[in-house]
Image: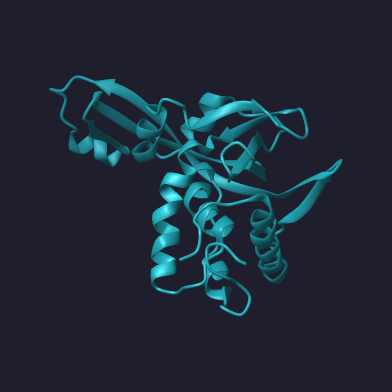
Length: 221
């Protein structure tokens, strides 16, 4: 059975396959080089719904009017009941970068988001775009999943999806593919999981196009 870890050579291999598929789908992914380092990037415009979370007393029960207005209550085991208010949608421009983390031996997603007027979103505004069913759990992590960091190659402020649990959630994905002898692109599978959290949906056509002749198991020789 192949390894479920990812080294930089394999990372570049999976990225190259993703770029080949992107070229056929014409959705804009490309290589970028900074000195001797490279990463892949895409810029896209998307419409996202903004959510707000308000803590409520455990005795509060959602009314029919709340449901009509897009407000629902969710019961979180540690933090009680929260009211989710679904606001209006907003058109935003996202720039995504996929880099390799030598520390975690995993891909890392860096991104930044702007309004169409060019204003950068704050960290709180980015969190408001994450669906509350994910947001509460992610924000309770010891290492908050979305953080504002300096881009390691550009030296500019970017948001980052922290890679501390990447190996944990990718291991069963890769082992299941190996068990069924299915081809899998590590970077594509990872991106399909983490991308939707921050407004990046991977088209189903990527999976349909994946062919055994063009891809390998979790770790190519």
